[in-house]
Image (cartoon, rainbow, N blue to C red; front, side):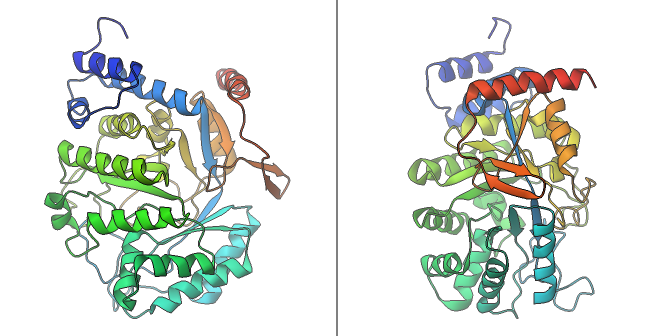
Length: 394
């Protein structure tokens, strides 16, 4: 850093160089718009390079939202529907298996499964869904059920978190997504999702999942009614749980989309806010291996830029995503692999296909297998230079 950097950036840079962690006050100070975004981005990019070199990960995945009927009425949600709403739907076994067959056909390694909390669907239906998919396609990794859904299953059955998770694992559950975290702080959570599982439930469910050997992701929904101190509180609760369990693979900052929600009067977060949040997340969550730029919510250009602001994951093909498109996301309904790889290379990074657990995937025509080992840093740097040169050549 040069002497012309902002004092907050200087202070944070000195801490990072000394191997010290950021404090909540550090993080709050970095949210001040007076702190130059480019200087903050440089700090985050250096941290990202230390952790992941120039690698930018993606996967071939398909989404499955088996129902949008939901007992909760979260004010920020455009996806949910009432039981008698013409928009409401429940997929049958044939439709669900057809989605899985599509996933197999395109070479997907992951199916991402979340949906509404349908009060007329018994717990056994959700277990059956996982077992049916796993039996039909045992190589397809099933990343399913947010902590809010697990909490609902426990509410329906009276079972403990551990029992529900153990039964889902036995049926074929491979990992859990991090949705439902929204904003942990009760000042915000009580206003946007009052009756949903609270922060302690979310954290306890992920703690239990980690203890059982499930890896999970974690998220934060930002850009609505929360303030910077709420975001900081959220990030530090995640960091504390990761210190305890080490079970989070990835953090995903989720930019709020207000269209068709109860907060439609709000504006979407700006690109500057997106990149600042991404960078601060990378610096605070020093114990979470990966930060994802979820292109569905950020937009392709911002997601691409985020690879220079701390992110090292671009998500994947994301076929059949409904939740954020119902809220007005104008990104494509899916991306093909060549487009993803081009966007990553254009950002000066090395595209690496991964599975859900960040094991490298190697492909030959329509067949795929896991790589024997992770790429060494020298090889990644060499590939990065080739990718950057190729992007300049057009």
